[in-house]
Length: 134
Image: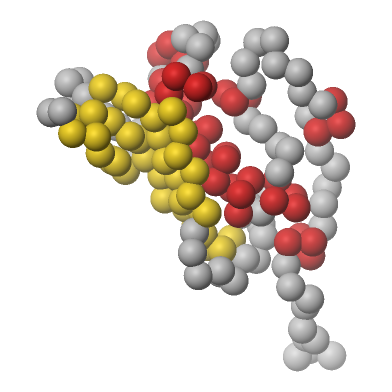
């Protein structure tokens, strides 16, 4: 949904790791064997705003060591950080949409939002200008 919005201007994301005693941000979902995976971050950009929406998440808040989290914790963390950044960037169209990795067994999710209705792109955008092709 963000990619089809005319105000979407890309995203940057990665992991938060402890490497050699120092906490650092790395791009992407790759980390070294000696790194301690602490969390993830994402920045979502809009063309009509000067600053990105940033989301930083902690591993222990999301990783319940189930299913894909066991085999790909870095990928799952990065996806969750991206989803949160996009919800902050486009609150009118994405505020109650969640990806599977963000929902844990036992979480109560409002059924109204599990299959969202189509929301016009215009809700997130400023009023359109007249087309030059009239």
